Length: 253
Length: 264
Figure 1 (cartoon, rainbow over the protein chains, first blue to last red):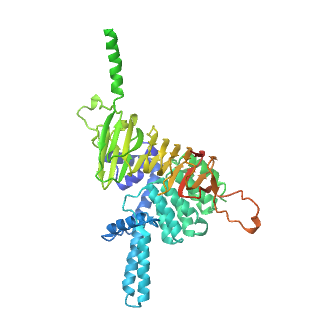
Figure 2: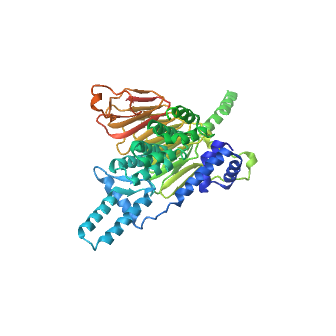
Figure 3: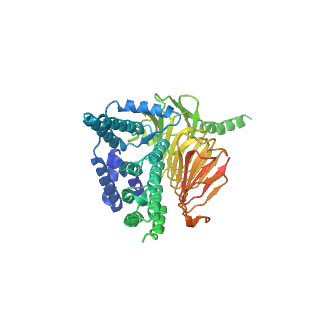
């Protein structure tokens, strides 16, 4: 088994999605190959970290409600719709739950506040259409990424959401769209800056790797140096990426 | 004369067999999404006006004699007679190659209009190119080194490749959702009708961009007072343009290949 082949399949191996024979072959290769082992360890610790984040099931009836909302939105003349990718599901549900809880909590004290909270919850419901319920195509997700950026100010939730998309969406074009939006925030947002530097270690697609190195070096993020070096020296890295990293390293002091 | 007829028959028969196309039809229960994966042969994609997915192929795959009585290990059942497995679950129809040998054959896959299609061609063993003709609808394609050619299309599309080129000739540009075409070292070549409304973002690093569309540069170069009357030389290499006043996003990216924008 070749390194490229192994590396492509590492996520599937970690997820246990491979058939027994391929899985065994890969494990054997990883045991004997330092570079693949490193990649395997990196990715598995990253995935463990994301798995450790609390997972929250959407309340029952949400799917139906969601589909209804979607229909309303798409049938209106000018659909103002944010479809946030699946990772926001948890976050948005938390926000909704908190909002509802707060609304209940404050209901005794002053109707004004209550009304305001209810209105906030309402507008959240209208704006945050929870995706991750499948059936979203790449173009729809790109639309969602750009419209999310237009709507919201640079909240930590939005940055988290975009970062997750950049690091885990299956569609490369969607990842690029998320990076594009994030790159506009990099100069004055520390969260974005460190998130992008970390992302260097997770990306395996040459297009995303090069674009990420470009954004970081052009924005003068010197903290990215070590991670760019890491990509450059990794055995499996695409030669285009290595060349580009080599060139752009010169701009980092 | 008789001898000649026999000779003709001997020559013509295998030819006839060779060009024989097998056909398979499947009508999805839910008309929603189609995913094509592990099908590394030549793929041609089309739309049809019916409700069925129609697949034709020149496949002539036979199990080796030695494999008599044996099954392909770990492979899905060929339920189409074309070396493919077609299954449907949760509103997604999956079309998957059942033998590695499918890469030696050509497939024409015609899908009902309005279905979202994803093609995962991201394998180092894919030798062929992808051709999409007259396809109106959402389409996602990922390749490693294969070229993608789209003709008479509308989008929305996402195509990404590492060393493959992407050529797209649009009838019109879907205003529903963005279209994004990106490759590392291949070229990107698009043809748009002159009246198309679009926001076009062109992104490249070492390649050149050639154009004959009436693009208007909208990259927000904030000018201070001191720079009045001066042109900006360096700007980010994501350059944004509008075409005919602007419209849906069209994102074009090639790292080292050239980008060509043409008027239809």
